[in-house]
Image (cartoon, rainbow, N blue to C red; front, side):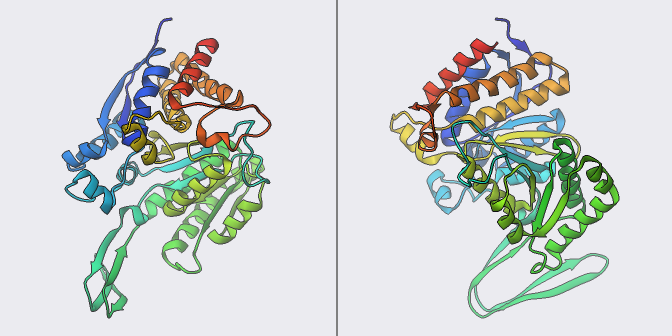
Length: 400
């Protein structure tokens, strides 16, 4: 068959460990046979980030701003153990945090539901989409290891100087400073309201404004102001609602709901809750993720990590049953968006076929190890990653 032609390259951000291996396999088995793939490639593997002093991450983010659509493999955010393991120059910050800070976007994560796996929370019947504010907070924080006795202060120097004592240390400890901006919170709010209107789903949002009376309360106030001025009438016209409460109350309500809504979360809350929701719906590898910036740039990625344990087994020559679904859906999402922007109907259709082929394979009981124990009312066949990709390719060929 003739390969589907592309006009504009995707920004391709390679990653680490087992997901890096799957990245190459997915391209070779499921994409390159059908698409004349054009990408601008950036190696965000930890070794190359260290070699370039993390400049490659910044370059990749600005390439996304140039071309509009990127697809990213899972990457390592190093801790002290990783610094020693990879002999790093320093403990580099999260590449996701760097990219999100440059793009100033909102991450929307939605679980992939299949017929043979019921959510662990029995009341959940419809997907719950997590909208994660992907800017600032702890991911761009500054930290100090306090050596001993002294006074910690929060200081702002502008036209006026604002100074506030944080804590008087008598012993060693730790100190953290984080920030956000009104403009980013406003972009987050509008992204969430627009996405809710597009999906015709209710929007829920929660912070801890009773404790964080300035920081979290600012999020609450900006959301409410924008909703009242710009979206209230539109929501009422569509028959959907915006609901705010404390984050702990929202979490309890989520557990009692039947799903089918968008849950807006601050950066850290969204990081944690997206893993909880994806696991409850089946697996960390069954979650789509897209970063959408205010100026219409898109970054698609898997919502999970680099699958380190499987990588160590792979290095020993063992075959692994690593679930590639979220990484495949990152590619399909990016290719679909590229096709939509460039008006390439065949590319959009191929992306739809790729996802449909994955769901056909899963619903036929051909599953990776993480899903086998969750499957119900179906005869299952556990396969390794290589055989799973081959089964998906066979379905693609039958559908095209």
